[in-house]
Length: 345
Image 1 (cartoon, rainbow, N blue to C red):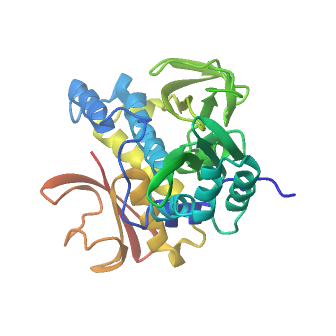
Image 2: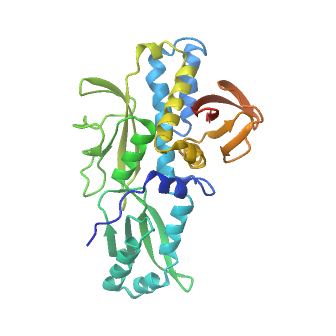
Image 3: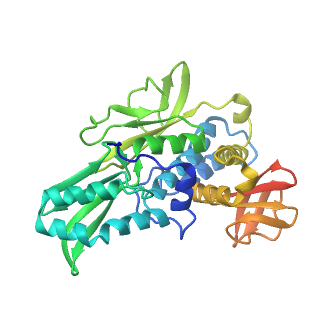
């Protein structure tokens, strides 16, 4: 018997999370409500042109944490996730089995749903009157989504499901940011506060948000927050931002922030090989995982983008669009094609 389906590939995650109607709110924040506010506050302390200095790591960490949060939200929304929720909530057979209270029938249907090819549900639990009738899937699952099971319009039970496991989330965040990420336990079978999995091993003890951490002979700034774990409870997610080079700290916070977003652009681009034949998917992923705007143009001809974009895009600096300024990062992966990224915040 094959094991439960695990993480989605980057390409499938793109299609499901971001190329549909967009992201939904209401997720547990991995970052503060407005990460850009922290970066702008740090910038204000040292001036737009002065050295970023001690605020450098915090400025980079704000960017990385914002991306990690967007990835988490993407596991709760989008076309693919909506379709998977509809498969469960719309199953008349499952609702009938739950209404009857039959554990065997419910288990068989839940097992069938979890193992259906091309669906991406990695765990599904169904409950009636507080009793778990069936729970199929991996033990370490992130970003649960809850819903009701109805028969003839009457609620007969509920379900909790997810489309992503912890390993998949760790891989996505690491690949898109290049920053080590460690998860620390929540509800059983995860011991509270104990290292569970991640990219920096052996892992340091669970740090507090904003703390400096020493590990493997290097120093890191910890960005720590909680996200939802399945079936309930929280996980601690620790992003460990390496101490930046002195040369970077000598630049302004605005320049540091733009370089941090540029690093995200390059990391996301590395997931698409060859990039030239996947510009539209790349743009969708970049926008969904950052909250910024992205375009690929050859001179004045736009060859990829989810909207028309500004009529003119500078290769660097700022551009006004939709009544607000955007910081521009650009890069020529395959001249004359140039990627333009308009950073959020």
